[in-house]
Length: 33
Image (tube, rainbow, N blue to C red):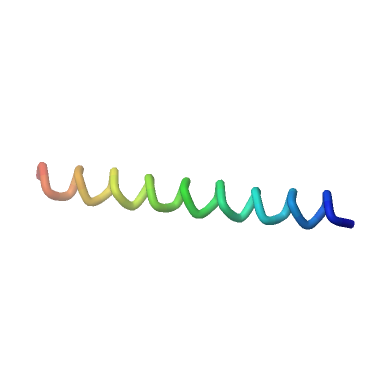
């Protein structure tokens, strides 16, 4: 149970970081244009 919870939390963390990076890249491209 504990391992499953840790896996879910780590997955959410990576997903949040991925979204943050995608948004940052999108803003950078929008500003360059």
